[in-house]
Length: 297
Length: 297
Image (cartoon, rainbow over all chains, first blue to last red; front, top):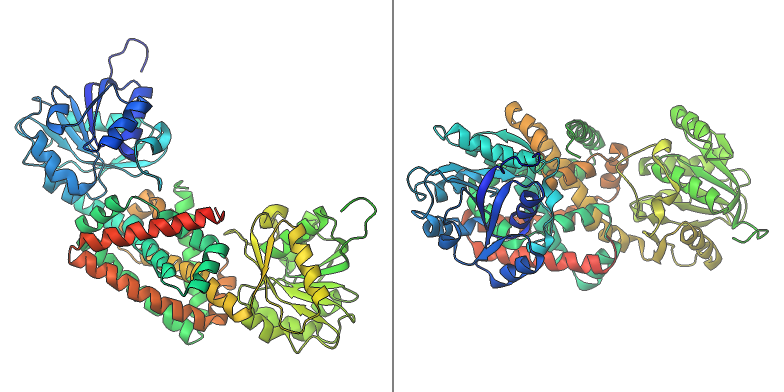
């Protein structure tokens, strides 16, 4: 904003000061998008870290108190905590307040939060598709969102101005913003993110079960394929547990499709069918090019 | 080497000027490890590219002619080409010549090359564990090997001096070198590299089969997990076809183990068993730390 222009929001309360919440606090401050940033975290270690890092103006342990007078509330806790947050803040929100979140599963986010927030509060669920394998307030940084997509999944009938303000916030944090239906979002993320993570977790654990002489050498010689897997598999265990519990149906559906395709390749390997392998691998390369062209890398 | 010191090899012939062969040519020249580097490729486009790039001293199309007078021959073609190369160069090698290769599956490499090379020729199979998703002479670079592992799998009875010279070559290209049994190497690589690639190829193809509206959005919003998968899945289709055909048994064994572990997680998701998911994901994180500590990232 130019000097003297009013910030986008007066008071913003961020509930959950992990990687995403703490990164948003930093970006809001850098872009001067809030007059005041209130941080809230149930975990004392996280509160102390956020205090040392000076990434928010004020830290409150109780969510119900943290939201007093807030114009925007950002729920940034693992999704298993949504119901408790909804209960704690419900009825304590200012009239006209906007509530958004950053969770990876949108249908469950809507189900956990809507209906609890009180009258004249606008729910605009969101998912900034950004992250690293690190967790906690110290892992965050203001540039985390730069150039990435954020998906908003407002329900029909939500005030357009509320959606526009959340959109503007993420855009000014550097994101490209799209809106879609919550269920559609969850199917897209199941295959682009949730199933790949599930496989990564699995393969890393399979290695952990190897005979010890083999395991030591696997770790020593970890080639590129495996290193990429282990990076993904180092992500926050609580967040990922909640993602799989909350997006169960879409994940299981996509796993079913994946199994069919793996079975085909496995049969080709067993039968020495080089033509099938070559055809499938050539096709994969094409898709990779589409993604590079979509400027996601 | 210091000025005036003799190069490690007189004439080196590299058969196959793809990513690895052309990178080795560049590294040999930069480190002055050969008096003369002869490049050989059956493909005219690759020969012309190598000529334009001036990465070798001389280019020969016929492998049998290319190895004349060579002190070291490096076989760097996809493994389906090994038998033909062995046939072409067999009986044409100088007495005392060393033959090495760069293939990803060592038992099959030994089987394809040994017995064809003639008397007084020393076979030292090797696998520089380095690569990118790009292919061809233009994709190579001298630093490709820096800091990575190279595994040599010489059979018992091979002349120690021949092994020592191949080891020194890779070390002077920046690699750490280990030796192990060929079959053991193939099992280690099956789980660290071959199975991860197989899954990556599969998941990318699963996306390609999605309904078109879903597919377009998957490509648009490709989150980190999926982008990592697609990078891996962009690798050379011929090379990977040959890897799976040549390391069939180890790959199928490791896939079997992986299936068991996936089934456990899938059941936990279906049953809403958050405790199991959290336990497994926490364990993955530990393995990741071992790998980071092993300085492979």
